[in-house]
Length: 304
Image 1: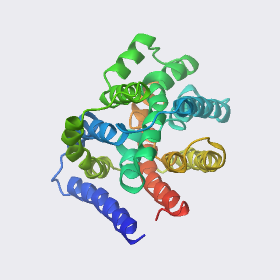
Image 2: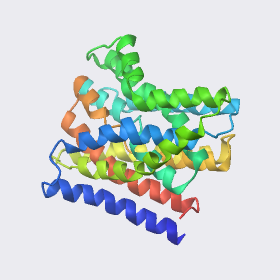
Image 3: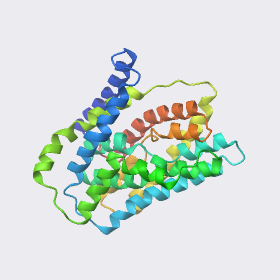
Image 4: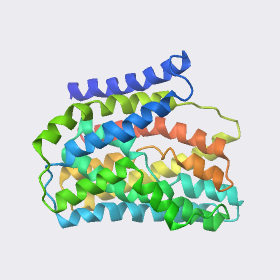
């Protein structure tokens, strides 16, 4: 327990270090994008390869990406229900910021450090379904309802096939399903890179964190985040009690549902006529809630 506590404090320290570096001018306003590119294109794929290469495949694991899709669709429906009778912009805000999770750059480093390979595998499988929605699927659906720009399936597909983490997920999933062994030489190469993933991901989160709020944002942000928290609690309890997976996988899924909102959500909200500033404010607050929620979930599960 002492080791896990030290890791938790270390994670929080790295996030605060990123915040401090940006506040002091050591990091520029756009430097977090450089760190993000390194995480998403180098260290995260390496972590996925290292953590999933030796997993035993079971057909029932395909239920995990389907669960992610079902939950995303359910959250979009909930946003549609809760925003009925409101403006198109407000509807877009609810429908795009209730679903989607920042798994690759946020939840996965937590699971990589505090749980094990099976939890990481569960996160990767969940992110397959989550990525389909948060990289364009949700926007395509919401734009039809709210009257924004309507991307075709080609544009959504292009976002997916140019996403290095998504392609890595699918490649490793195919290898595991076909029981193709990843060469040990490749694992020896990716392991040192994967070790850097938690540090860079937490530093990136700190560097990108900023709260620029208007007083009128507080109520709307509170509602969205409270709904997400309530849904996360229900999902975590349901997964732990009912999901037909190993305990480590169930724990991983129960923790990742507290992850913050996808960083793409504010841009899509603005494109659908919503308040981009409010969406960005909600996104930043969801990072704080995500850190607290995931650490609390780890504590509740007896990991800490």
